Image (cartoon, rainbow, N blue to C red):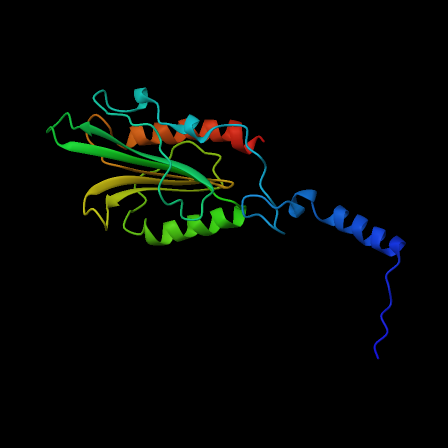
Length: 198
């Protein structure tokens, strides 16, 4: 017959205090699929504030608001949109697709970023160089012929903590790689203020 030794209340209190000293209290929250892992902070802003302003796009662009995607693919919130315009040089239809998603944990965002980079962005070279240093934890910019569309596009992939931003855009005389860089710099400032400074 086994004899069990009970832990004294004093020992339990000591274990609890040591655990609190080592592990942040947020680890004990169960929220947004977050259990026994470091939970992310509550955010005091709406994801819709990240719409691309119309003055950063071609004059004839049709700017649609961000809408929640039907499949968040592991994210806890997100918005995506496609912006259309007609090329000023030949009248062809052009587009920019834009997506922002928030993941439940930092690890989930890091893994998703790596997977996107490995699968979706392999066909783009690094010809889109940012002249300014940005605050993103990870970023990739490039242009090339997309493996899905077979068309020349410029792409941006940014990660700010648990957020991932993806931009894929046609380019022409009215909207070139420099315009795309200006959007990256704009969002970098916004993310630096509202996410990284939290």
